[in-house]
Image (cartoon, rainbow, N blue to C red; front, side):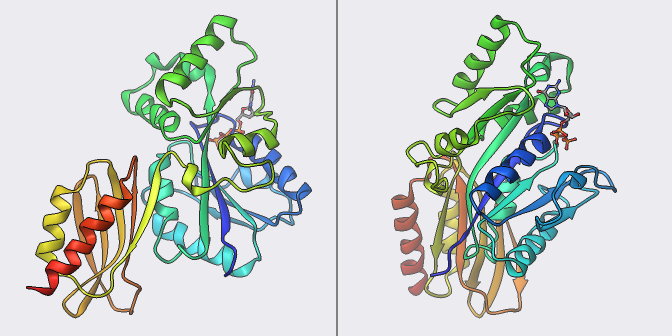
Length: 307
Ligand SMILES: Nc1nc2c(ncn2[C@@H]2O[C@H](COP(=O)(O)OP(=O)(O)OP(=O)(O)O)[C@@H](O)[C@H]2O)c(=O)[nH]1
């Protein structure tokens, strides 16, 4: 079977040090003879950070919007193109500082890309002084930083050079409180010992193994239907589905019609699909009880037959 490309998502507030870390990751991957590509997303019309990417690294840019909202369709196309045009080992996505990590993860888990990509983890690069000073920021900015910490598989507290020992202790307490058990590090200029970062993010993984998706804080799970189901039966199941499911997306068939199905924060939506797509749904959430989900969906298929 074809090896999937490992995807690393770099999240973190505007100017927190994502590109600084990205440059080091690229050097590290090159030393390991890993062919690595970068997908860079910037809010502005002109890319600033892409100049720092070496010429031999395949690069796609998504400008003037955020991949977690207005550009999520384009992200899918660009990821597909990067995988088809290159024999990749690793793909690093640098999200904008305004991106919600779960939404970026969601955009990577397109049903089209399931066989191509395997998301290794979300690394959140946090601007430590800004976090400590967050009370002067808007509620939205505070919430965003909180999400970036909460959903990280590895937290890099950056720009810590000017902080007092008490402030550094506070950062450690915050990491433990907000994302218990997740590895973190306090750095300057994102100078992380990268072998540690890879192994810690994967917890039990050795230095040279990719981080397994099973170690992701936010879990993903895929269910494949054998055929069409009954809309009412499926939606009844959905009403009872656990709230820890953040997203569902994929293809579902009602009678003779295939739909692209999207479910986000409790709301389902459908779009008619003209192609014959595999009837797979990708689930994204925390603490997903896979066994229960599978049982429930099998029941949906069974009950649909009697309608
Ligand atoms: N003082 C200080 N400056 C830093 C540190 N890390 C990064 N910087 C600087 O902070 C600025 C922003 O760093 P970037 O790596 O571009 O940050 P980014 O998260 O990619 O920024 P955006 O793409 O705009 O969101 C640059 O000028 C860096 O040189 C640090 O630890 N301390």
